[in-house]
Image (tube, rainbow, N blue to C red):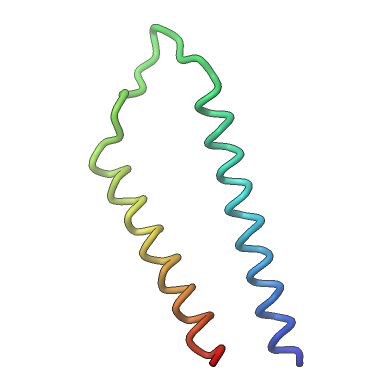
Length: 70
């Protein structure tokens, strides 16, 4: 029974982290950029690579979490 509780706690923590990241992204997009900003308008290769790596990690966690549910 404790195994199920740990899985639920991990899932809730993951959802909370995801919502927090979405909130931060929305607030970042809402802020107007100053004209003297050095932030590039398009994401670079490193940013894109990082996002792909994060998505891959999340997919692995999902597969691991749901593969034993049968």
